[in-house]
Amino acid sequence: MARIDAFLKLGREQGCTDIHFAVGMPPLLRSLGELMPIKYRDLTDQELESLIYEILDLEQKAYFEKGKDVDFAYQSEEVGRFRVSLFRKISGIGAAFRLVNSDIPSLDDLGMPPAVRKFLDTNQGLVLVTGATGTGKSTTLASMLDLLNRTRRLNIITLEDPIEHIHTSQMSLVVQREIGTHVDSFANGLRAALREDPDVILVGELRDPETILMAMTAAETGHLVLGTLHTTSATKTLDRILDATPTSQKAQAGNFLSQHLRGVVSQKLVKTLDGRSRKAIVEIFINTPAVAKLINTGKIFLIPSILQTGRDKGMQLMDQALMEAVLSKEIDPDDAYLHATEKQQFQRFVTDTELLPQVDLAVF
Image (cartoon, rainbow, N blue to C red; front, top):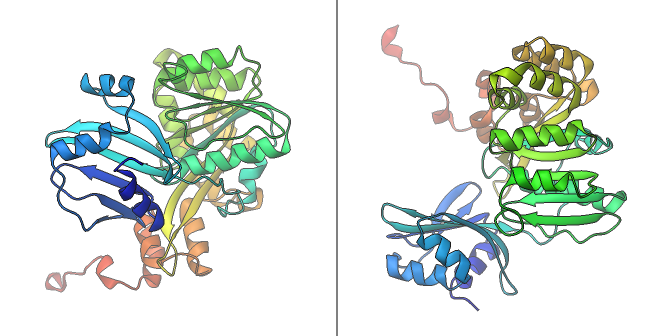
C-alpha cells in the first residue's frame, strides 16, 4: 500500500470530491465545493515528492522531470480509482486527486431531465455536456455512455485524458483509449476512430480548434459524438465553437451547428437544502427548427428566450431550473442565489442577508 493511500482513503471515507497536495501546507480535502485541511503537518518538497513518486511509473517520472505536467489515473485495491493532475509551481510540486466512483450512477440517480435521455435516441449528431471544472461533466457523460452500453448494440469508442470510469462491454462493445497512452492527442484519436467502425464516439474534452473541427466532421459523417466543453451556458457553447473556427469556415460551422448539434446540457453543482451534498442543476438546449434558424442567421443572442419558453419541448434556462429546485426545497436558496444569472428573482428566498446587495443609506 502506497503511503499516499492513507490520505486518499480519508478523503473517500469523508465523501470528498478532491484531495490536494501542496508544499508548505497539509493535505486538503474538497467537500461540498470548499477546501478543508487535514490535521497533519505541512508537507515539505522532499516529503511530497517522495509520496507522489511512489505511485508513478518510470515513464511518468521521466516526463515530469522534463518539466511537464502529468495527468494520469491512479488505482489501488485499498482506495479505489482517482484522476490525478501532477504539476510544478513556484513553491514546489503540487497534485490534485479527483475521486472516481466505481459505481456509475444512472441519469435518474443524477436527477437529469428526460430530455437528456432523449438525446441518446439519435444515431447521429453532436451532444455536449458543459460546465466549469468540477461540476460533474465526466459523471454525466459516464451515465449517458452506460445507458447506451446497457440498452443498444453499438461500437462505442472513448477518448479520455485520463480514463476515469471503467466501462465493461455489455450490449455494446466499449473501446476506451487514453490520451498519452494509446493515442497522442484527441484530434488524432478522432481520426483513428473514424477508421474503426464506430457508432458512438465520446471525446473527453473538446479543448482545441482541431479537436472541435474533427468532432464536427465525425458528427456530420453519421456518428453520434458526445463531448464536453468548459462553457457555462448553451449560448456560450455555440459562441465558443464558432470562435474556435477559422474565419473562412465560420459560415460552414454555423450551418453544421444548425443541422447536426442535437443538444447541450450545461450543469452546475448546487448545495442541497440540508447542506450534506450537492445536486446537479442543468440548463437544457434542444436544437429545434426555431433555434436552428437563429443559429443560421447569426442571432445566437436570442436563443435564451427560446429556451425560456420551450419548457413543453424539454428546454430550460439555468435560472428556471434553479428556481424550480428552490421551490421544491431540493437546494439551498443561498447557493442558488450565488449561481443564478438574474439574481433579483432569488433575493426573496435568501436566508443569509449578507449575500444581498447592501443599500448605502447615506446617499438618500
